[in-house]
Image (tube, rainbow, N blue to C red; front, side, top):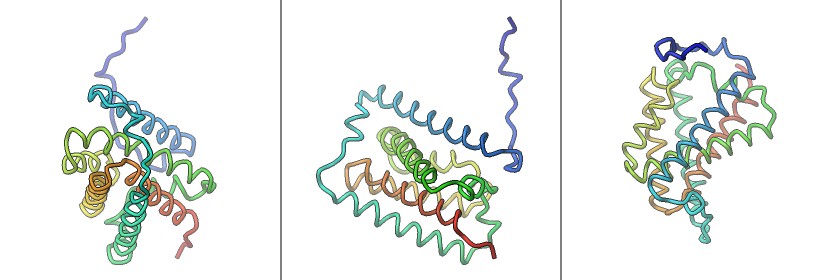
Length: 197
């Protein structure tokens, strides 16, 4: 049996045109599964129960925080897309490939899975140890497709900091989950239904 050598592993930038729909979905669900796995490991070492972290609060105030921040973020995103050159906001076409031909139920499912997995990892686990600032730096860094332009990188950082802020204010992970879900859902639906100009 041949030994596996890490030196033979090559990391290279993937052009979105090289991805087919199946490969894109495998990558998406694999990364979200990995985020969930890492979140559970971090929570384990923090001696925190994921069920407690995801406990649904009795006070509905968190819903207002989540919807309010999502509304503000979508408004800022809309203004950025109106006044900033398109190439400065380019994500390489990944979001278009992901959402353009996807059925609505699948866009909802993707938004739900991504919001729960990423918020459990970043706000639920990592922010507990690093605080909102460094968690936001890490969150921006993993959204690698935005790193070639400073505007989307800054926007991802600011968005992450906002999610961390509402988590601190409400004391529940469900506020950033709702916000993240609404942003991904509305952005995905906008990509699906936008008219080409």
